Image (tube, rainbow over all chains, first blue to last red; front, side, top):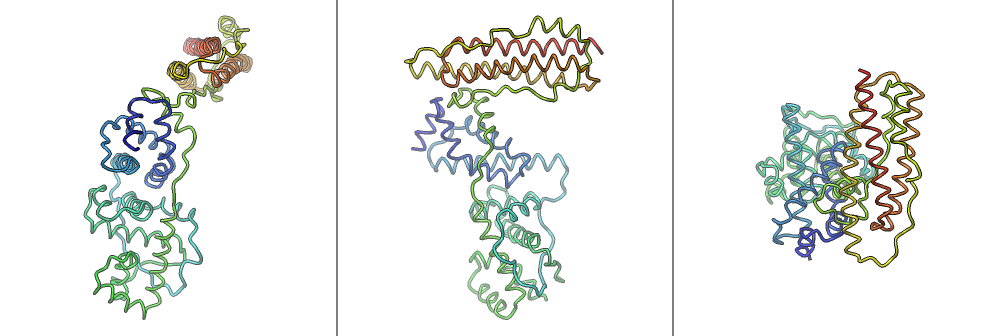
Length: 181
Length: 222
């Protein structure tokens, strides 16, 4: 069915590409929004689908069409982040600090509101944010995250931990960091 | 302290169940005796659990419109008809003598050509209708690009506004935009409606003409 839809899109069948968009855009928009931020998400979603339209002839049905689109979309977003990083001469896009809590206060009270987490996510540096989004939000394994980002699997694991700790810190204002190492 | 530091560094892997058995056992033994580290673990698990609940997000409607406009063949052409809207900030730029503007606008002002012909007879082949809609989209797209470029040029300089000129321009372009909207509505229900297409293109052509003349006059005033 994926191959059929892909072929219909390539042939310009009326409504085929729009159908593809309607089915897959929400997931890809969420990916773009969380990876690159709200300011660029709309434009990135356009880029993703226009790129997909150009490259549909390369889809062979080896994976689900949604999976193919997701990888393509991730690469489009990551390329954007790399260009943005080089433009602003970002020194580091990772979390290198230590985060450890010696507070005696209780855990995060109640359930974390999704909106609060979305807002806290925006404060992460790009690479840590990418690892967190791809692993925790999108459910990819560390090896797949590492392959997409061009990093070692161990780096993916350490960045994920630091991202979670940073988010925890953002969501628990009374927690303090800095266990003596 | 060092023990807590070492354990907390492992807590994400512990929460994800990916530690080897020996390390997992050591971490677990520490957690049983350390409330602080237990709190950290609970928090990390909550962060991860909430992240899993972050689902798809509905994109704004204009994204598909923009995509469809740029496709080589506009799929779902009926849904991609271009919105041609006036730009409100167009007005804050011109210092043009009212007489010149009035003379120019006599040439371009809309007349009764804004009326839309009745809907064409039913029974067109679906393929012909879709093809007509596709061609229409492409043509309207070219006009819209021209209009956008002209508006950009026209808003490049901010000069003192002649209120009478602004009012005249606003009224003229509003009339043109109403004609455009009216034609588009007719074409939404019947993309092959030739008289409506003609009316739409006439209104777009006149709008481009008004903007072109305005830019020329603006340049002449510098």
